[in-house]
Image (cartoon, rainbow, N blue to C red; front, side):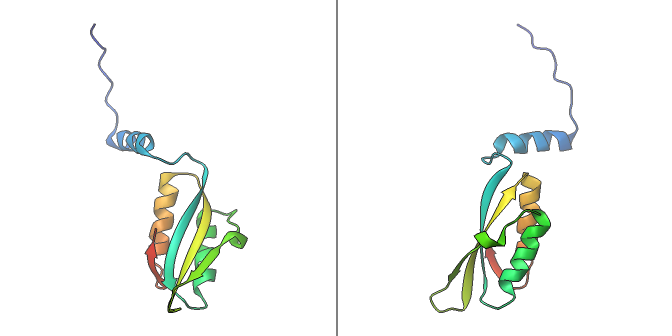
Length: 105
């Protein structure tokens, strides 16, 4: 049996299609993001503002905080509604570029 040729796709469409197939996340979904930052007063409000930029329905009441043993750092868990891989990538980039943030997982 001879298969008909597959029409060529633009490179961007092929990459987007491939990304969706390889994703382990079903969109939309609630997605926890763990951030470790300097334990300073402005950290949580700054993270809340960034989260709301990417998820307007973000609920700051669900934020979980865990200070480090020495108190120098603060672990923060944000739960956002992930709508796409692109949204998550942009959110991670915004969080990692914040001066008080050390690590984003």
